[in-house]
Length: 183
Image (cartoon, rainbow, N blue to C red; front, side, top):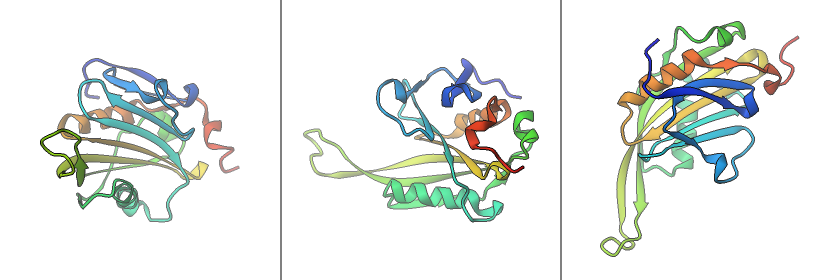
């Protein structure tokens, strides 16, 4: 596994899950309320966001799950334009996920957003910004759940390696987080 510099283990959902990612990402819940099904981190130097989310699984086949969730993000972000590269299956996921029968998929794309800045030179004038989006879907059919890991920022080159590292270090310590699962 590629080692990402300045990484440390982070506990998610009260310690039910842990994974490794750079310590430059700060937990948003320390500053504001975050929905119970989400863990949100922002980079302390860049305009990058890393979001973990537990959701009910989408009805799309495995081959279309990233596209479904990416489309949802496009709608939420009110993006003017969006492009998604084909998704790929991630091999070499953590033994914790393998033991849970998980399947993991990743896709990268871009979204063009209109931003309104409040400075004197551009009052009321929208400015377009292209953000990079990485979306990873961990499908836990046994627990009727999908885990979404999404990154958005201006540069996704290094962050693709970070997402791979997160998946390889992702450990579920308390599966009851997802309910009882199939019996």
